[in-house]
Length: 149
Image 1 (cartoon, rainbow, N blue to C red):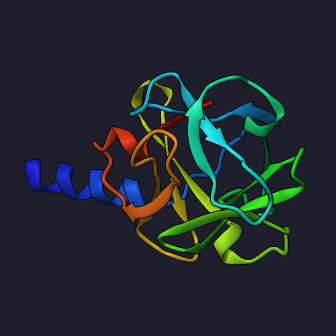
Image 2 (image 1 turned 135 degrees about the vertical axis):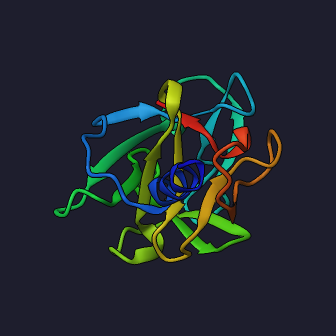
């Protein structure tokens, strides 16, 4: 029975969840309290900086037709969050690619893991404050991969 519970828990991490997302929110890092996902400029890496609630930290959530993918846009810089490659998460023009699609994995307590649709099993990670966010293998217990909105 314990083995079955472990398998079901692992499957729930990789199974996309259809749900409602907020229309717009600041995305805060659980692992770096008091910080938020921040746009420096279009074409530049997205970073985690102290939370101000300013337009550079406001993200719009667009849920795809299937309900399983999110696109995150920053209205001030007019671009989408894209995993250009695992070590480079940028804000670029929205073109509807899988690398601009994110799978939301809600966690207990209201936190979320954001897995990139192009890079399966890779989640948005805040390695340190004021540094660019990256993709790393999804680890549900890693607070640096947990986001709140």
